[in-house]
Amino acid sequence: MTTMPLTVRFEQLAKELHPSKEFIKQGNILADMIFKVLGSVKGLSIAKCVIAGSMGRKTALNEDFEPDFDLVVLMNSDYTMNHKKRNDVLEQFVSAVKTASDAGKLPEINITRTTRYAY
Image (cartoon, rainbow, N blue to C red; front, side):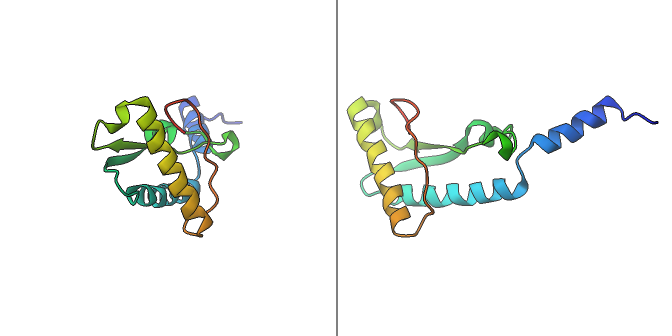
C-alpha cells in the first residue's frame, strides 16, 4: 500500500472545501445584477461596489458551509457619515433590491441586517 504525501492530500482537501465554480459564477452574476440595481438609485452616487468577506478574499468554504456574498458599496460623498442618513441610504438600497425582485429583474433575495451599519 502506497501512502499519499501529506502535501498532496492537503491540496486535495483544499480543492474539496472550495466552493464550486458554478456557485462562484452564479454568485458573481447575481452580485453584478444587484450592483446595477443599486447604481440606478436616484440621488445617490456610488464610487465602487465590491464583493468582500471570504468570497472576495477567495477563502470561502464550499456550499456545505453555506458561504455568502458580502457586498460592499462605497459612496462618492460623506452623506452616509451621519447615522440617520446612512440608514436612509440602506433602506433605499433594500427597497430598490426588493422592487427589482418583485418585478422579476432579480431572483428572491434574502437580505439580513447584520449590524446597525449594514444589511
